[in-house]
Image 1 (cartoon, rainbow, N blue to C red):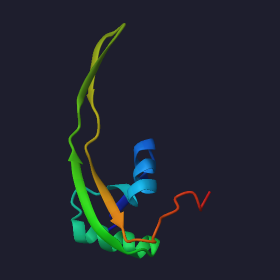
Image 2 (cartoon, rainbow, N blue to C red):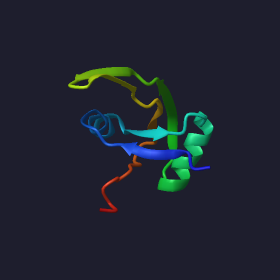
Image 3 (cartoon, one colour):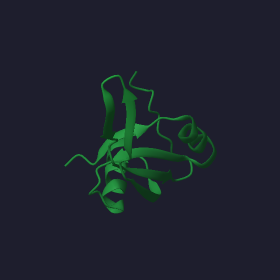
Length: 96
């Protein structure tokens, strides 16, 4: 079971990675904190201090078009913020 879906590379997460050594990931909704910790330590060869998780529910959105109102829903996802040990870092841009 692949737990990590993708890393979060946003301005806010870049600021937190520089200042607090925290990195964000979108993970599977059924993943637990120990599973996330083990997956990140195995994939990036770093030591994880703590894992904080947040579950975002999908929002209902609608828009008005020529043919009428179109309504839909955004996807729900789980986000994990991982704090690494002092001296460890993850470089997302190394594979480019």
